Length: 215
Image 1 (cartoon, helix red, strand yellow):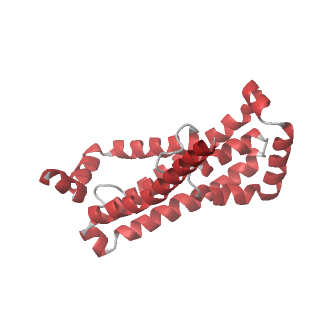
Image 2 (cartoon, helix red, strand yellow):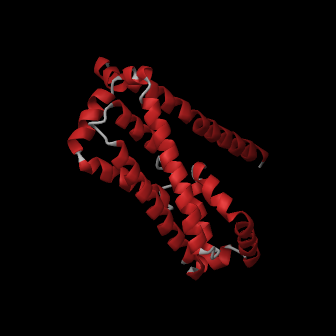
Image 3 (cartoon, rainbow, N blue to C red):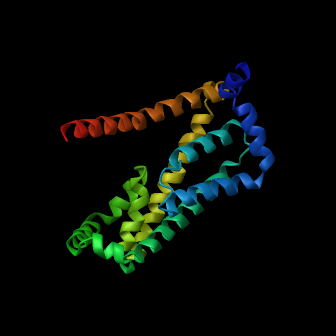
């Protein structure tokens, strides 16, 4: 039990050497995770912004483990390519009979009008909404949103998301208190981050039970 708590509250003592020994493979793993989260619609629950923040903090605590410039470049390229792939998948949706059957033309027309008015803002600010951001490129592609416009807005969105989140994580990791208690602080952050998820799950369970009792 003592060993477990030592691992839990001092995981950086084990994680940092592991990441450092992996070398360039670490960047490849980060690349793959962000690419899957942004490009493959079946992985919306993968950590996106939190991974960028956490990895950038590691780079701040120990630059020999991760290089912040290589890290941010990897995140940027993977996110941009992932969104572009997601957009491409969206352009193929209309060819699927399931899509034609379950998505009425009226809803597609409404979506096209919305993206014509607010497409740029949706692509940029939707980037900061977990789960929702995974579907925006797909929807943009499915309704025929101009790819050049999508590519431009996506370039801005990915830049703000990656470099903004990454630099926040980096400067957070430079704080002496964080460096001294890295594992404990990030363990606390992880617990706080789980609260909305747990609350949503409990609320959903409560509504299901309430509906079951009524029936």
